[in-house]
Image (tube, rainbow over all chains, first blue to last red; front, side):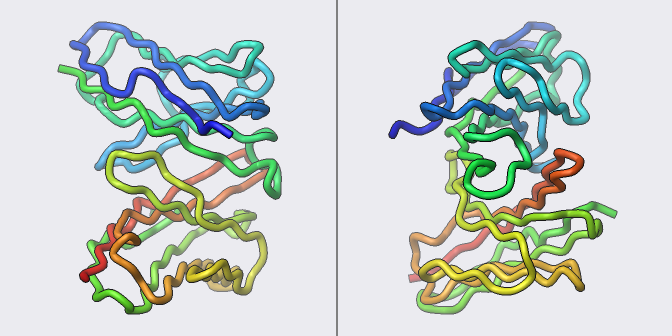
Length: 118
Length: 111
């Protein structure tokens, strides 16, 4: 079974621009979560989508948004980029929604999109 | 105080040694616990998850949870150079739909 895929893998943008990242979950997985990873803050939860609905949101400004399509693919958008948005953005998918006990709730991560904001 | 504390290392041990990686947490409501391994330039890979206090073993890996002390550990036996990676603990509070990751411990196994 193919794993979680993310595109693009690398991206360079300038301050003020906006960016859209894409995530294709493992086939059959209905939950997609997004994370930001930086050396200073570590891995931080952004939001989770399940069946096209945002279920949970982390403590990030409204410039960070996302959506999920009927085929469970998800996109994340960051508007008005800031230098501090430079990070590795990871997507993870699971069968069940976030917090489900057991294998259904187990999240599998993609390789990430490395975003550099200049 | 961070909700999850993890020693960032780096930790360097010789091949074949037993490795002990640890996290402490502050909220007794946290319900289940995971360990991820992350190689350079890759996404985290789930190694183990466990819900209850006690030990869970999978091959060379043993996860240990002590809920009374709010302490979790990952032991790696017969460590190999291929185990060199960053190890992240993750703790889930299902009722709050919250997951918190430790900062990660960089581990290097010397041949």
